[in-house]
Image (tube, rainbow, N blue to C red; front, side, top):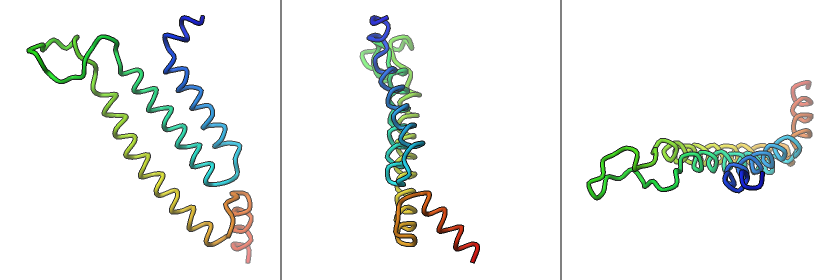
Amino acid sequence: MWQLLYENLEQAVAVILFGIGFCILLLQRNLIRKIIGLNIMDTAVYLFLASMGFINGRKAPIVAGGVQDASAYINPIPAGLVLTGIVVSVSFTAIMLALTVRLYRRYRTLDIDQIALMAKAEDAS
């Protein structure tokens, strides 16, 4: 069992990180902590994709030395997905932080439950 875990260490770490981020996202009421939990989950997905795209003994898909056999190179799609995901994640985090700042300025709290109660009270009046 330990041999299998050691061979798939990156995937195991990715699953643990995803679980940590998911628990933070579910259990915390603070909006900043929720954003951090979401970023931890994103990082876990990127680690998982990068580890699945790596094949030991193969090289980056840059033709060098005249080797044109596809079996000598790794698949570039997971790396492209990770890069695209990072860009989307940074943009999403920036938008979420901007919205969090606006919510804080309006309600003077970052507690999602208190914000919901104050918003309902505003709608009722």
